[in-house]
Structures are given as structure tokens and as C-alpha cells.
Length: 605
Image (cartoon, rainbow, N blue to C red; front, side):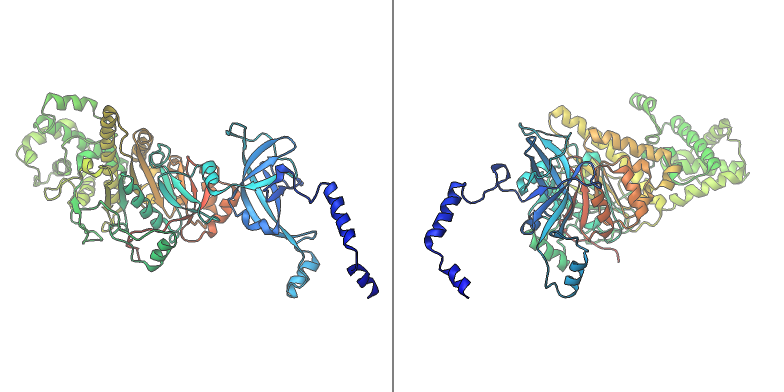
């Protein structure tokens, strides 16, 4: 007790002397100017260190300042270089001076944590560039030295470095409270570069798609969506989902329907939203489809394809001799330029071809003449027979009956060249701010769906070509246009394109030419494993929702560059609405919480 009293009675002069000595030595400790404001330091490398990454340690009070995906500035003081990096692993909490799995640590935790030591934070940072004095960011040639100070970038700096600014908001970067991820609808590197939206059922693809439609409409883009299940036929109404409404309120958005939406459905088929204020039934035009694509879609074998082609040639000859088409010098000039790998014979209807096949089959089987449905052919049956005999269609009758049966199947659907429904008007569909929903929910046949998609792609490409030329001539930017293909694996599966080479080449040509003409394709599927490498190779931008199949992830890794292993590892465990987003305009891919949709979805039960 005496010693304690001696300490308490220390003269005031002694403390003053200590303060004076401290001032003479430079005062209280202050970090060097280069370290002012830093929240961590780079660590020494270890044998397990990897090129392009550094370990950063920080005191425990700074752990929350570096969430996953955060960007940092590292000032390598020794060699006076500045690096930019991104957190790809962590933050992790580690005890000071002990391994986290050391026996004292385990015992302490099990016993209630009474002797928990002080701890620090650790993150793994991937170096994404070196910042030069003029502000330019170049690929790094060196690494930051150990004990380099680390500074977090604020939201505006992060957005600038990652290039996630633009006029269309996708959502919030995961790990940040207010860092919005945006894309540029007016950039030729975004929608015309083609987009893949992939993920398992329930991962949030429909929310992403409807949100994109809503935001693209507000930017006066023209959008066409091939809606296989009819999910988007009610996006003109605000969402009625309570959880979605609450999620919208949380980020300051409101539930609202999408303006200027129009639903189209095939003649004889219903739409999933019969109360939509703008509904139009349509029919297909047989003359718009390449005969080679039709053969592939109908899955004709070699012998049937040979007969189909022969009948198609006879039909063309008959149309020309009977004055159906071509009729004018302009028509004949068009005939010279006609490419049947791209389109069909002008003004040829399915009934024209069917009548020719029926007449050939009757003649080969020595049957009575069939009833011909087209007046142009029925009124000149003898002339038609002469053309058929001159064509030397040397095959037996039953084989022609098989071709007649295949054509009869799609003819009975009455979806081609109908007098009760007009064909699609692509000029109207591609007006700025218009969303055209092609509702195929009442169509079970994949053949019919693919026939619709084939004509749609061809018609939109032609119209966008015309729109592009008109815009260039007028000195203005063309209207950006995107085609959303739901269930893309059904249309362009690996199995199908091996048998539909012509159709895939049409899609590939649209993809290549579309990039120059502001026409983009959006492939949406919950079965990316069925998309062939040829299709994946057309895509430059990606929104990846939850994918649990490791084989699918491995396949995607071969097609999508720039996504680090940390994000790939998170893909199987993403929550609904989360997605790995990779656009060519971004500096690096990001994990994003996609904004909830403001409009109503007719979800499939």
C-alpha cells in the first residue's frame, strides 16, 4: 500500500518533465503523411501467394470498411507507384498472434469466449491496374511492396473505376449500401453486343428480364420478347406481389406497369392475358421463310428434303408461268438477287406448295386428282401437270405422301397466310419505346414456335436494316432494338443446331450484322448446358443467376472470360435476385443484387 501511495503522490513537475521530453522528441506519434487515412497495409508474400493478388491486413475496427468486391488504392511508398485493386476474398477475422484453429482459441470459443484475444482483418486483393500520374490506368507490371498503405475508394470513385455508370440501372453492387450498377443503353457495346441471361428456375431471371424491359422502354428502345410461357403479358400492370412491393420501397422505387406494351398471338391461339388493352392476332408468311430453314425445322430426313426441294422448284416455275410472281421488271430484278438461304420465294403461300405436293402424289400413285386449294393452280391444273411431268420427279408415290403429310400437319394449324389475321408489321413493332410481346404460351409444338421465331428474326432484321439506313441518311442515331428469346435452349439447343445448320447461320448473321445496326439478341434459359458453344460464342454480355450444376459452370468458364474464381464459387449459392454481371463496358464483373421488378409477372405454377 505504501508503494501505491508513492505513485499517487508523484510530483506534478515529474509529469511536466515527461511531457517536455516528449515534445522535444517530436510529440505524439503520427503516421507518415503517405499513410494518413489508410485502413490497412499489404502483407509479405508467402509460398502460397498468387500472381496478381496481395494480402491486406487491417485492425478489427476497419474490417467493415472493406466488404467483398470493394475497390482499394494501394500506395507502394518505396517505389512511388499507385495500384488499384478489388477485394476478391474476405474480409476474414483472424486472432492476433495465433492461428484461428489453435487449441487455446478452440477451447476459449467452446467455453463461451471468455479469453478471446484481439483480432485483425484479412482480405485478398486482386490488382486490376496501375494508376499513372496523369490518371490513366494501365495493366500492372509489378506488385505493391510489403507494408504499403491501403485506402478504400468511395462510391463515386468505385463507379468511375468499374465503369458502372449509365442511364439504365440494374441494381446494387453486393456488399455496398448505395453503389448502383448501371449500363449504357446508348452504348454500342451493350445491347447490340448480345446478352445472355442464364440461371436455374427460381433464380430471378424473369425479374431481371421484366426489369430490363421496363427500363429500356423508358429509354425509348424498341424491344421484342418471344414469351414462351406468357409470363410477361401483364407487365403493363404494377406488381401485386407484396414482397416485391416491399423490396421496391426499400430502395426508393415504386410499383408501376410498363407503358406502350403490345401482345401478339398466333391466329387460332389464345393469349395468357386476354384483358390486355392492346392484343393482336397474327399469321405467318410462308414466303418469308427460307425453304432450307423450313426443312430443318420440320426435321425432314434426306429423302423427304429431296422431295420438298423438288416440289418447291416446281412451285416456283408454276408461279412464274402463271403470272403470280414475278410480274414486273422490278420483280425480275429482285428474283436475280434472291438468296433462298435467307428468305423464301416472294408471294409463295404454303397452300401453293401443298397443292403441288398433293398433285405429284396423286399422279405417282395413279389416284384421282386432288382438290387444289389455290385458285391459281386449280384453274390451270393441266398446265400444272405438264410442269410436273417436265420436272422428272422420279420417285414412287408413297414417299410423296409422307411429304404431303408433314406439310399437312402445319397447314391444318392455319397459321400461314391467313385472310383473318394480318402478318406482323415490323415497321410498327420497331418504333421507339414500344415493347412487342409475342405470346406463344398456347403453342405446344416446338416446330411451330421455331417457325414463328425464324420468321420473326428475319422480319426484324430486314426492318432494322431499313431503319438503320434511314437514320444514317438523316444524320441521327438508329433506335436501339433488342430481341429477347425465352427458353433459348429449345430453339438453339446443341442437338437442334447440329440438324439446323441453315437456321443457325441465319441467327449468326443476324448477330454479326446486328452489332453494326443496333440490333441485339438476348438469350434467356434455365438450361445453359443445352446451348452449344457456337451460340455462347455470339454472346458478349452476361447476367448469371444461380447455377448449381458444376459441369455447366465449367462449360461457362470456357466461354466467359474475366470472372474470378471467387465469383464462380459463389454462383451455386446465389440467392434469388442475385447475379454475376459481366458487360463489356465494365472494368470487371460484379456480384449484383438485381432491382425488384415494378411490373406484374404471370408466373408459371
